[in-house]
Amino acid sequence: MGAPPNDDTERHESATPVEADLTCYGRQALGGETHDAADNKRTRVNGNHTQWAKGAPRSVPGLLAGLCGLAVLLSGATCQRSPSQPARPFTLVMLPDTQHYSRKYPELFLAQTQWIKENRRRENIVFVTHVGDIVNNHGDDTNQWEVADKAMSMLDSVVPWGVAIGNHDFDSVSRRPGEVATFLRHFGPQRFRGRSWFGGSSTNGLNSYQLFSGGGIDFLILHLELDVPDAAIDWASDVLRAHPRRAVIVTTHSYLNGVTGIRGYNTRVSKHGNAAEDVWHKLIRRHPQIFLVLCGHHQRTVAYHQVSINDAGAPVIEMLADYQKEHNGGDAWLRLLRFVPAERTIQVRTFSPALNSYRTDPKNQFDIPFEIPAGCRPPEPACLSPRR
Ligand SMILES: [Zn+2]
Image 1 (spheres, protein in one colour):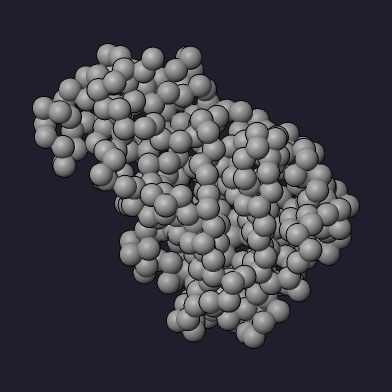
Image 2 (tube, rainbow, N blue to C red):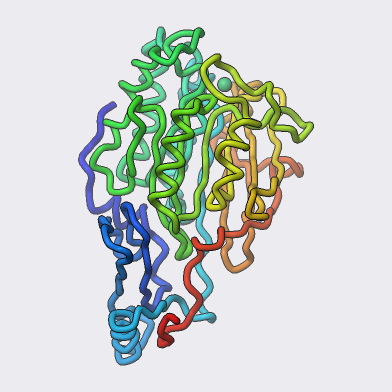
């Protein structure tokens, strides 16, 4: 465990790997801390707005680039990629419940993260999210935590990543709020401190957010604690208000339940939080930045997704994957969410590095349209047009 010091390799190769097709750009931010997509600089924004201009790109003649930068600086023009240069696809990896790998099949957990490490460039992987139930036997089996730690450490200095605490990750089955010492020791916020992409955490250390970019889009991902208690909802709402121009993904362990398509009130696994239906009403639907929710936990369902409509009338994709009940605790199946911005599509694929195989049934392999929320989209190409 422990957080290796941040390094330049990680910042430049993982957090923002896809901006080579940008010509130049400016941006406006309303407040909070922003993470510059092209330069990967984190900038504290205190005023009404702050703009950035990136220098001349390789593919654009110097004069045009200079004019573009000047226009951005002087007039606040937004200036991004030319229409002939579609954004490069990028991949978000979703790791479903790994509890049985930590318990009995460590080689499968290691196979997952080793594959991510080896294929980060080829797949243009920009983030890895673990949906929780990292281990099976709570806090009493240190060996399982060591397996999990070793596997996830494979991603350090390779790609930004985050974890959501699952019900099996509490110190005991009672899942009382204070019984999280082992989880925090291995995957608490101190592990990520100093990472350029780590945004911060709630006071109890069980909720965190991370920043990354792909296809010219700036994202924020929330990892929310089990059953998302009201305090976590308040914390998440504050984070979203401080980052109004980020497209937001939520990962939380238990959310969707069953093939009925109902989030329902029966998803709660502790006494201390909200059922998924309450999480939807109190948080997800109210924040139009959120366009994707990921979860695991329900082994009988295995794989399911649906689209709900938020208060802004925009679609929110909700997706569950959990293969723990299958052969070898899941045979190392993981989810690849390949974003194709030019087609506004996420190509969802389910792949096992251990089997070197894809699951191709419709629940595990499908393309789904996605919309970057209004206000979070990259500006249209308008290199020399001042903002009105
Ligand atoms: Zn679970």
